[in-house]
Length: 80
Image 1: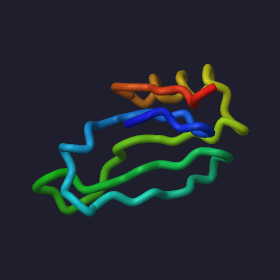
Image 2: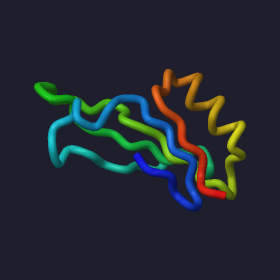
Image 3: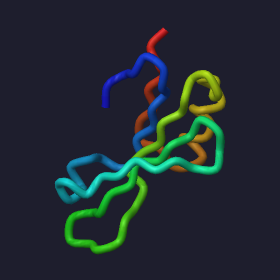
């Protein structure tokens, strides 16, 4: 997970816990928020791996609070 220019990033679970090639990025009904899902190793259902917040819609503070509320293990603000 590296900092992006226009996107704040929140990790929920480490990518190495997931099956290779199982990741998908999905839009949500919340403006500027996308979710990354994948299948954990040994599982057939998907789970959230992380969130991405468009900096034009999400302040760093708001994104950080959302990440914390969803048990994020790592937050990285967009590059300034």
